[in-house]
Length: 121
Image 1 (cartoon, rainbow, N blue to C red):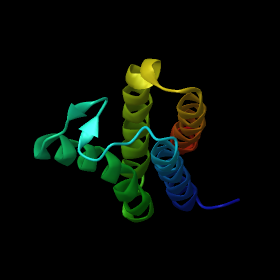
Image 2 (image 1 turned 180 degrees about the vertical axis):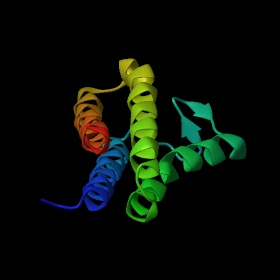
Image 3 (image 1 turned 30 degrees about the vertical axis):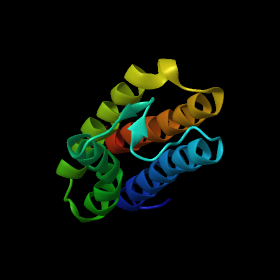
């Protein structure tokens, strides 16, 4: 079996790629207009917030490898749970392909929580 910290890191890479695939598909579907989200102009503060949210899975890839246990598992459980809740809050307005990709990301987040929780069993 793959070592726990490597498994968690792999799951974060898969989750991040799923989010990026959704972004790419939205661009190709014509739902993207530079400088706007849902037809509203986006300022630098909003872009900064989006950058913070999108960099978290990238940071988790690294933290999953370098954090010692049990801190590693606790951080993974908390962050994966936050991402599930965050994505559930916005799922209502998404197109079918987005909903499918979010469901895939929910599976990756649930697996992250499951594998991280095995540290405590």
